[in-house]
Length: 118
Image (cartoon, rainbow, N blue to C red):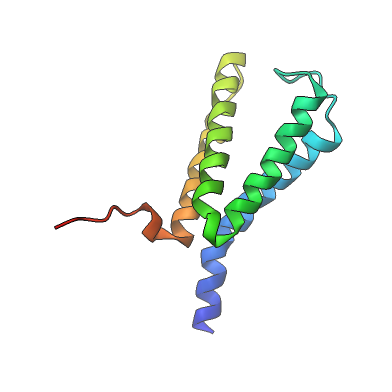
C-alpha cells in the first residue's frame, strides 16, 4: 500500500500538468483559425499543437523526461514573454513553467543533481 501511494503521489503533479497541456494542444490543432492570437496563421497553430503533444509525450516517458520538460518549459517561457508583450496577466503562466519543472524533479530528482568529481 505504501509503494502504491508513493507512486501515485510522485505522478500526481505530472498528470495535473498534462491535463493543462493536452487540451491546449488539441485546441490549437482543432481550432487553428483563432484570430486573437499573436500568430493568426492556422498552419503555425497546428504545428504548435503537434509540438505540444509530442513534448507532453516526451515529458510523460521517463527516459525522455528531461527533453520533454525542456521543450515544455521553453514553450511556456515564450508564452510568458508574449503575455508580457500583449499586456496580459502572466503570473499563472510563470507558475505553469515552475510546476512543469517541479513535477519533473519529483519524478526524477537525480537528473537535476550535479555530479561531483572529487
